[in-house]
Structures are given as structure tokens and as C-alpha cells.
Image 1 (cartoon, helix red, strand yellow):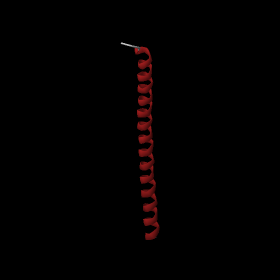
Image 2: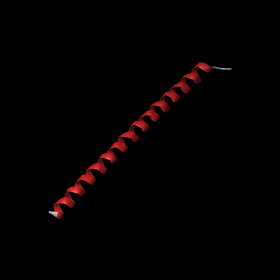
Image 3: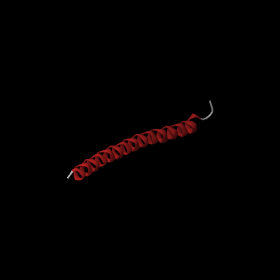
Image 4: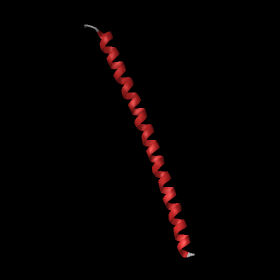
Length: 56
């Protein structure tokens, strides 16, 4: 019985920690995705400004 309780506790701890890890991965993925979009938009704006700027 004692081994079963320890096994159950171990399984619950592993499950909870893996959920936290997966949550962290998704949060990091969202942040990286937002930063990537901002960088791409900034590059597009910079390229457009190069063509519109012409000779000053």
C-alpha cells in the first residue's frame, strides 16, 4: 500500500511538472512569435522607407 501511495504521488508530481513545462514552452512560443512579427513588420517598413525616401 505504501509503495502504491508513493507511486501515485510520483505520477501526480510528474504530471503537474510536465504541464508547467508545456505551459512555459507555449508562453515562450507566443513571445517569440510576437517578436518575430514585430521584427518582420519593422523590416518591411524600413525597406518601404528606403524606396520612398529617394534622393534627399
